[in-house]
Picture 1 (cartoon, rainbow, N blue to C red):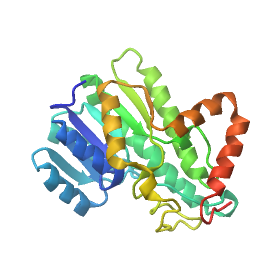
Picture 2 (picture 1 turned 60 degrees about the horizontal axis):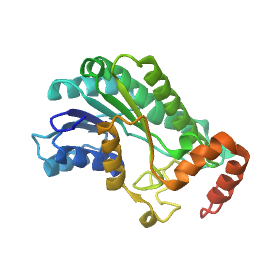
Picture 3 (picture 1 turned 90 degrees about the horizontal axis):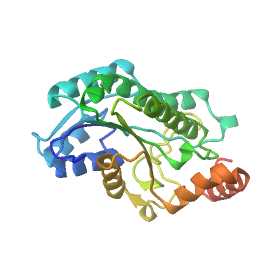
Picture 4 (picture 1 turned 30 degrees about the vertical axis):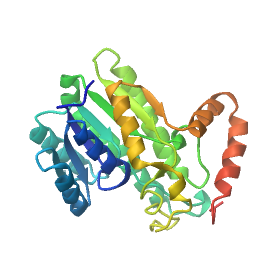
Amino acid sequence: MNLKGKKIVITGASSGIGRALAVEAVQRGAIVSVGSRNQDALAKLSKQCGDSNLYFAELDVADRNSCEEFIKLSAKKLGGIDVLINNAGISMRANFAQLDLSVIEHVMQVNFFGAVYCTHAAMPFLLQSKGSVAGVSSVAGFNGLPGRTGYSASKFALQGFLESLRTENLYTGLHVMIACPGFTESNIRNTALNAEGRTQNESPRDETKMMSAEEVAVRILNGVEKRKKRLIMTTQGKLSFWLSKFAPGILRKLTYNHMKSEPDAPF
């Protein structure tokens, strides 16, 4: 698939990977519709990309009606949908025994159900175009991270959903891709929820030593063009994937020690 002239819908595009995806897609000649709760950020993005190439609308992925209206509006503006990229997401950082369960409920609503709502609404258009649906997941989707129980659960669920969707559409022409970046320089750790459901407002990691959102965006769109099934973007991620299958005990110990080394680790 060449993305020139394709109609692409991206959720969670006000910052980070979503914003970089929108910019890269427009540069490749696509017509893009983006959604987020942050309308000011989307308006600036639209001006940067050219108002005729990028449309934006309000979207709260935790709300089913909002997702359905956003997809309906995007399809109308674009004249259909060729690619849906479920990027919107939120993280959390807390010890499970000490957190308020509303934290996990909210993370699941955004990361999992948001993708389900948008994909379901977009299916008629995607099936008609024999297009692509992609989900931005994480290494946490096949390797449970301590202190990130809600986040890992949501990414496991997202990957299971997309794997099932792929098999269900084995003969319809629909392409389904799971993208798993490594730790990426973005706003997701600053906005991660703590045990009480408040944003932690600072990252426990050195953001300058991570993959850039722009690099991740290029790889995801290349994967869509090549109709890849799964993208694991780092050596550490690939090692984790294979260890999860063949040496899960070793992986658990390595993961525990690695995450424990974070400043103020919650476990």
